[in-house]
Image (cartoon, rainbow, N blue to C red; front, side):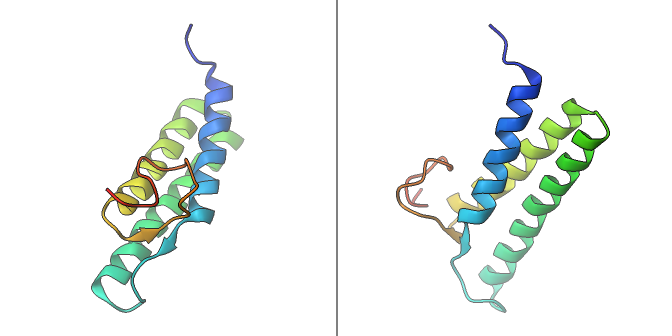
Amino acid sequence: MPADLEEKTDRYSEMLADALDAAEPAAPPGTPLGEAAAETYEMADSYLADGRHFRETDDPVNALASFSYGYGWLDAGVRFGLFEIPEETDLFTTEGGAP
């Protein structure tokens, strides 16, 4: 049975917002890795804002795509070691941020 577009869009919106709250930069600001973490976080946060805009304009397909892209950026940052995440979280594809 296919997933309901509205339910899936809501779920991905919440998942991305929660993931942004959980991710903490792993390197100090001003370092190359710190800058990469900041840029990655900014991309994910921008996709969250874009997705919310698309939801407000009744465009759930682009909203879901934006939430998915934002989550992908953040999850990749976790896999690359740019962010520290709580060990008990199931928001990311790795446990505790370790690849």
